[in-house]
Image (cartoon, rainbow, N blue to C red):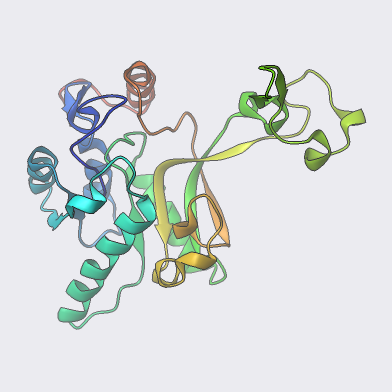
Length: 244
């Protein structure tokens, strides 16, 4: 799990209380309750996040100052952690089979998602990774806009790049389901990080052949207004304020 102490859009988001627990505790709970996770590592510069990780027996990876800024890329943070984890596993005389990538601000995850992702990769050798996905048809590329030089709204992506414009209509479902990797849980093979430059943008650490772990309403929290949405999701998945 990666998470830093500083945040500009939502100060202190990773340790802000959600249903009475620090936000970053939920992915750690999922990892600790997974049937297939052997060890947990937390990459952070924050003593508070580190302390939450210690509750779950997590190994601490000290996140360097240059990787603890708002401009630091998750690619580089995962690569840094991967090298440390790899050396740890080798020191035990073992082989690193897979990694589960988690975010301190992504609480919409349960152990089932992690286990399902691992089993997907064990079943299909062609998969590089598997990621939780939520269907958000309201955010179809067909609806995306940008401002032109005159401040007018224009299609963000040329309609022809999406399909035949003559088949479009106002229904948000007209182009089929729109899947978003929601950041809740990603399971990858080490080769994804060994060959990160070959992965698909924007999250190159997922590799190229990526399986879908079905979810709904998944998101990582970047703004305070998202907290009630996450609390709704957690409540629907059986979480109760202050209870494990």
